[in-house]
Amino acid sequence: MNISGTSTTTGTTSTNSSDIQVDTMKKSIDTQEQQALKIIESSTEQSKEMTAQKTGMGNSLNLMA
Image 1: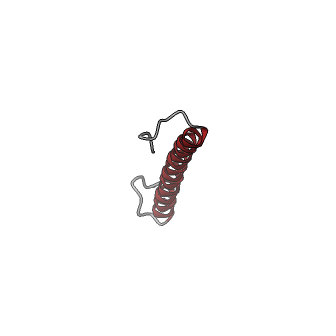
Image 2: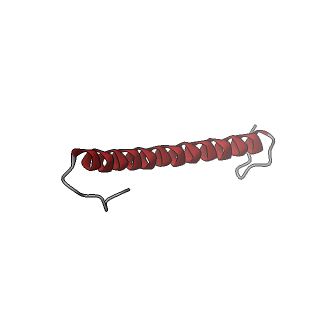
Image 3: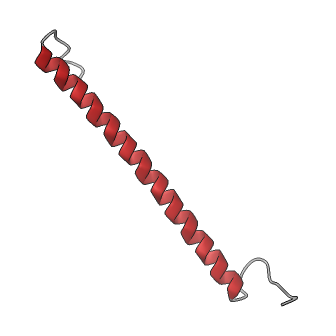
C-alpha cells in the first residue's frame, strides 16, 4: 500500500485508492483460500473417520451389528 504519495493531484490519489483496493482484494482472496483449505481438511478428516468406522478401526465399534 502506497500511502507516502498523498498529494492533491488526481493521479496520485487514484493510484493510492487503486493500491488500497488491490490490497483489500488480496486479503479477501487469502481469507477465502484459508476457509477453503479448512473445509477440505475437515472433509478429509471426516472421510478418514468414516472409513475407519466402516473397517472396524474407528473409535466407536458397533458390537450389535
